[in-house]
Length: 290
Ligand code: NI
Image 1 (cartoon, protein in one colour):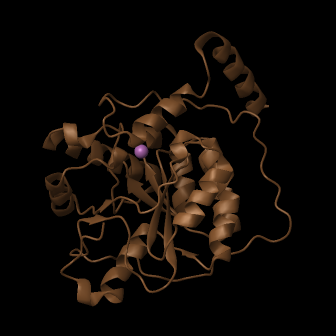
Image 2 (cartoon, protein in one colour; image 1 turned 30 degrees about the vertical axis):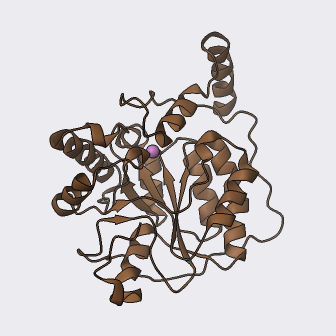
């Protein structure tokens, strides 16, 4: 009933104000466009997943193996990462811009079915709106990363404003779920080298970018998102996607199953970072792997 009521509200709003998904699309377009205006992202709404029905799973889904891997990456592990050199086919799935009240729980169901732990780069403002979703993310063993409070382009902000964006988000995460984020991802991937360095030294966060970008924010359709991720994945990849968007979550069953069938094993970003010194000690001096 709640869903139906939401659909109705969405339809009513949609007839007078335009598409109900505009806020999503604007936020998505802003996410990936470094030249975008620096105003705060569009106000967060709770758009209905129009015409969505959970994809039926026929037969057992592949399962990520149980792994007890350390997540305590070293202080000198590096400042920026877009991937990590590993000898095993590990990948880290990352989901940005949530939590979202419908899409994130739906994604969590899919991850739980496959024993996959992912990393969620949450927007602090959304954490304050949907703390119970953050609690569930943490309770189910996923990692939370800091994606700032209002999703602004940090290269346009001074030291104190950047600090405030990150600390407000950290405080929201701690308040919601009792854990500290250990890494950060800048909105639009935009962060000056000097900012990356002081954020690492003052706050302890490595800057996490990505090596696979399916451009899901452009809404190319779930099958395209899936094929881009499957063709782009390599051992040590950090894969970008957005649980803000329903079509991205729609793409995940085929994406996750495809990666598992190719032999990939899913770890969190911190677990991937923690592999680096052990896996590539000879490259310790060359620790900026983007
Ligand atoms: Ni983002």
